[in-house]
Length: 99
Image 1 (cartoon, rainbow, N blue to C red):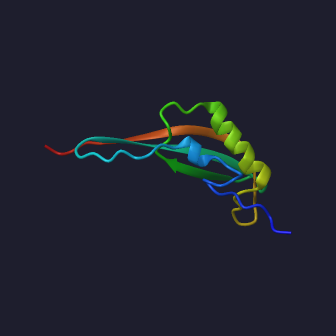
Image 2 (cartoon, rainbow, N blue to C red):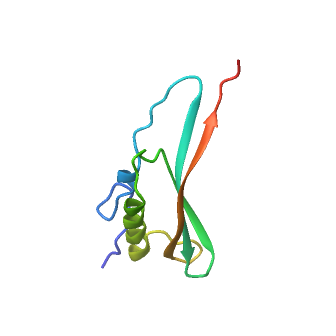
């Protein structure tokens, strides 16, 4: 029996629902990334980053996707699977054009 494989746009998941289409413009820009930090079975942590999260993203939506990732053991790092979402936040970086 084949194991389920989590895919961002696939049946197990939903990371695609957390992001928005990128709007590319010249000049100044603000880039945002959703960072999800997981505790692993070996006690270490792993960070998953998704570019361009939706502006109206809610913690409950992130929690739902995180739960699926943990339940399906969607990512394994050096033999360690995620056991819990430790922290999730949006990281913003602003680029400014030079005058």
